[in-house]
Amino acid sequence: MPTPVITDPARGLLQAAIDASGEERWDALSILADWHEERGDPVAAGWREVVRLKRWPLNDGGTFVWFRMGRTRKHTYWGCEFLKGRVFRKLKQYSYPDWSDYDTKADALLDAAEAFAAEAREGKHG
Image (cartoon, rainbow, N blue to C red; front, side, top):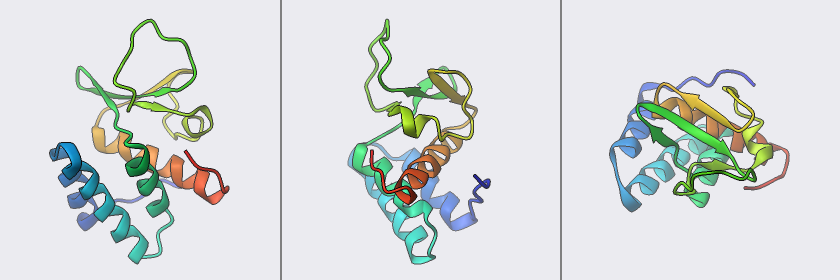
């Protein structure tokens, strides 16, 4: 998978989503998806899945984490930070078998959007 480039307008839209809370967060990501779609960028489908499934990385003390869904966990989290195994395996930063961590929330979200977009290209969802 090629490394996606976030241009300034897209970076601003992503930062607006990161700074928002509640439904405003999902609205900002939907606008980001629209922006990509208008430019013919297939990552738009990935952003739409992030919104549809309401996926958001866990902030684990300044590291942002995605977990692979389907594994028994000692701790219960919110649930929004879990990705199905086939999506999880498409993350570029596949750190560990059951979780992947990032230095920034933007990096975590972008990687998830790319993974969901890859799923969409294969005709799979969620």
